Image 1 (tube, rainbow, N blue to C red):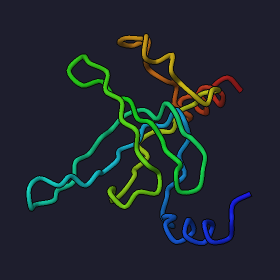
Image 2: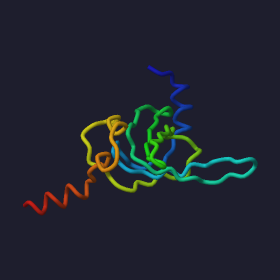
Image 3: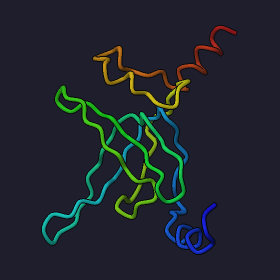
Image 4: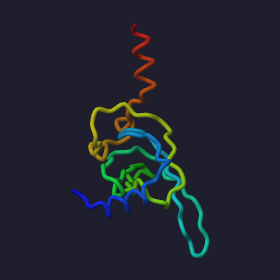
Length: 125
């Protein structure tokens, strides 16, 4: 039950070029970082462990391991601060929130990809 004025302003701020990705996918977010007067792009690559719904306030959380330390970052989905979101691999998961990955280390923290599932299913048939 949002007013028409708020819906109109929200529709102006929605991004049109948001790629399709789900929880469990490995993505590379090219985030624009401002350092002094210069602006550059910095890539953040990891597994999407959470994706929240919403219009302008939709977000997604990406987790990566950096020098043995888990790093999570929450990105606004419709922010003008990133240039692209590249889907590196498609994950094959059954859950919407993958918080259990926080407690896993090494090979146990890997996720199956959809390519692996399709190739193993065709090999069995």
